[in-house]
Image 1 (cartoon, rainbow, N blue to C red):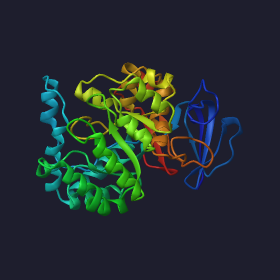
Image 2: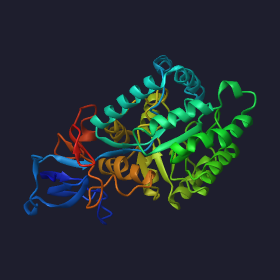
Image 3: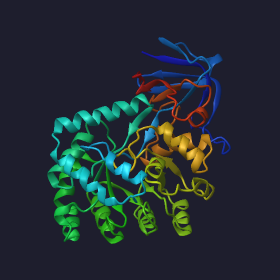
Length: 388
């Protein structure tokens, strides 16, 4: 059955060649959905017939959000840790181990139910594509079940056995790297598309991260990397050297890091929920964009450093505190996320693309930043099917 969304006041297509309008904005527009894909985009006055008509009433339509960085399969929470940070305690990577213990203790059924709850929560807020990482199992059996469960809800699964070194390997981290590159990778690769590592003080060194990513590449996975979250380092340039699709966080970047990113196909994925929750400084997105770096926005939904699933919230923070315009932030949360996943069929409203669309209860996308905390998602279509 075909569906026509018409009388769209402002349509964000992310298609077009006008550098002053990366969002490819159309006014008084219409979109035809057929067979789960976008079949036609144009003026409402020229719209074709369809089996079903949805009148947008002059409201805005944007592509579904593409959240290219999340950690959704875990047990427990770390609310007490958040409270301690708000009282002045500094964030450190070691808190991950408490989530590992809770995750190992949870059953598949408990993890699956919670995972599906998070995905539904995201969908209700307009996120139609989500990448999900493992990383809270840190044993062969537990990492395998985390990527297997994630693959039930998304094709964008990342093996992150290299999240931190688990307690049982604290005295021999290189032996854990051997396990990640060997038996664990062999068990997880069939359920994964991506390989990732946390290249950071308190987690994995650049040399260890290189070993892990190169092992993943040899196993047919494409690299991503956590880097420069807690301090400066060489992780960003490692990611660019290895052709990573995305390097994520980028809170502390040198001029050399930015130059490397600007001359590459590697997307820098910014995670404003982390800085909000950890009270670290916000990255300067204006500096990055002006230098020619491709920027994505994602939530980094996880129990420790960013327990939000709201892309609208991240957009608002990026506009207020990171120097992005509303148009740049919406592009980064849709088309930018798609680029971070090396996808051209999502994050865009154009003929042939997947029909993942969001109707806002607002006249423009600006309201996502202008009205922070207000639920502005009215309707969501995923693969052409109305899901909200």
